[in-house]
Length: 573
Image (cartoon, rainbow, N blue to C red):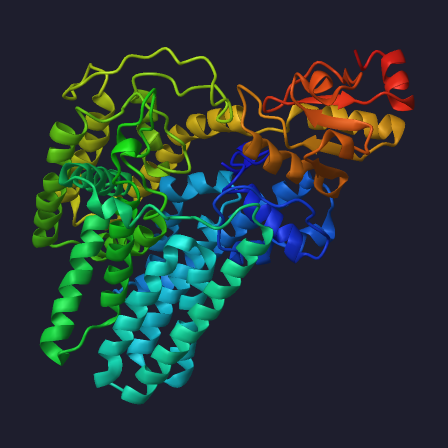
């Protein structure tokens, strides 16, 4: 997956954090970032790369492989978590490795997003919670407080970890009120400090204010049917992307929770794991419970119906527990619970959500990675029109008002994905005592899932990734004529195009060589990135350099010595 990543595919999710890293490295970030803003702990990890290379392309490739290293390191805390469920050291590593080999994790290797680092710190926080329960000391409490704060500092929507941790520490007061009280104070203090630092950075570095997740509370007032659609779609995604193992883990954790309460009248660390998972499910469902998101005009978005990116790192903890149950040996009651709960989610999704869902819509791989193995069954190829082309030609597709999935119609995607999980449940029912066979089947399923997911990841990189052609043109000019400075015309509004998208992309590739100008009289560089009508707008005899267009923008050269040389060389016209 990582080999497909040659350049950022996300001008906001990726480039924002890469630019924050540039600022933190002390090597200079001269242009503010456009977008909603992100929490920056991953940027701190990336910052030292800028000390090694000043080339954005090389920086991105190193960032990708650093993310792969972080993903591999995540096997360690996940194995420590699985070990708590009566597995040997080798068995716990197997369970953790299987989690990290699932498409919901492997697909993220293709992007320099913060999700891999979030998965790592979240798994460390889970282990810290178990260690604190096993021995309630000040040292272990401080580790949990710090890991909770780091989790919050890593991702905006990981804020749910804070209230869950504080509530769980309140439950620990009965065991050791001094440690619990100091833990509550330390966790709140550390998390608040991280939150304030993150918000301060966003205020300093964003072109506009931070507004990530502002629609969540508003969506509480959405119609019950909208919320139900989003909830079923996202739960269905978690079920099929894990082959139902997330249900096994949830049941196992719930059983342990009840056992702890009956024996000790206390809530153990499984309460923390279930709490952060459940809280994130609620937050994610509310984030997408809006009519304009599910029933968007035009082609719309399929991933809005089955969004998994927010929940996946939290679900991975529960999946690790579910795999531990499989490796240890399942009881019939576990399987019956799996099948019963699984069908309660799958059946209404297939026969109520799927018939009306935007199955023809856009599916961004990073947003629903666990479902990509079945993406070949979608009714229409994913659009190859770049994401920035807001007003491009409409794609050729059909929509429907209601279409119940069958094996041959345009909603078969939902049926095939569901039946894969049901077939796996039946296999476990028959072969649950053959643990080695189950391990082999799971490893094969993970490998097959990664292979089947790759075409969608590669297609998205071709669509929205890659180095903009204007960058190649500029590199050629810089090498031949020793000119690197250029301006970006912020007054330009391309149609079709996306000026905010373009500003982030060009700022990443050109860094301090690029200057933003909002007045044509302020242009003091010979080269300018602007719209197709830049010469008329600027009242200048500028010539286009090359014939390439990037994100709706062209490279222009102003009158002067460089223009004459480029014209003589046939590079400007």
